[in-house]
Length: 406
Image (cartoon, rainbow, N blue to C red; front, top):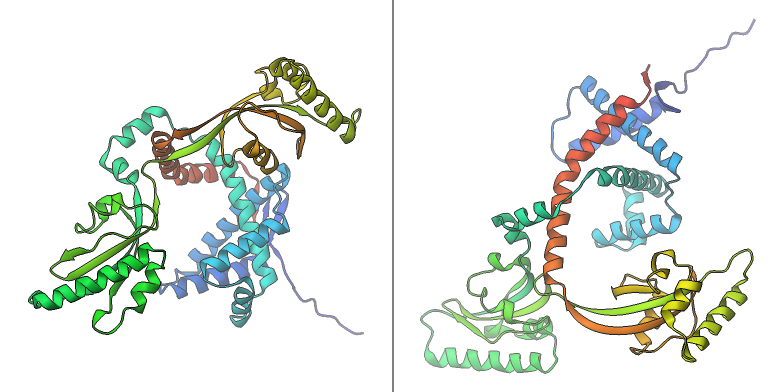
């Protein structure tokens, strides 16, 4: 009689609602967590504690992934490709270089993509469930903006490139005059369109500059020598020479964010005709063309919008979409809106929603500084509350789930 031995290939370590966690998953995650801890130079916790915490994490992830599956959360290949490109760019590599680096480190690109897809699903499920639990009131925003922290957060930020031509404090007047003349010549070339970085780098020998990119800084964090000058510079502009005991300074305003914000806005209304089972795409286009002609013949745009437009949100307002700005409308609509003169009705245009005709009523350059500050404060307060609400939500779904640890 021949005898056969049974080999255990894998086993279930936990049942989580309609899913199971296998021992192989737990082993793989333990290896990843241990390697991450070691790479940060930290001490690995006791084995039983590490196993318990890692299994708890897998259980929570399983609950969330099942929630995402039930509501149809999907990450397309295009979205995944874009995420990989962002990660590669953050590491200052192309996608091909990033893949090569993974393979050199013995990692699978395919496995990395699937782990990334999993993380993106988890982020969407968390954001969808946690964000709705967070409410930021106008009073909270007002109170925050009145604090020192709020005022610091909403200060304008500047990205400055600094160049210093060093001079000895006891340099002769002739030496100082020659250095100043040299700096003035360079400044003139920069203001005539030459690159600040290239001009500064080309100055060598006794006139070599030191310095570099100071990074993003709020006005209160700028060196006192530049604090009054920087806010007066436009993006790309270079300051007049600034004299100090160290020598002669030039600063170039690489970029700005925050501060005064003026936005071009367009007041527009439209009529939307949507193809359907009883109206072909050609018929929808023909109706839009007919309505444009009727408006040109003197009929009221608003009345026709109330009668024909299938945009429920704007039809009863005569098609009025209010004041819009760049990025609020789909690209096809925005392109036609931007090319249509105030008071004119456009030719029919096709978007993902159907056929539109639009009328540009007016345009303005609106000061959005106050709103931008409030939006920034609201985002900050939201993020401050997010982790607390996320922790509470994770405890809730864990308590409500069926979990059987083997």
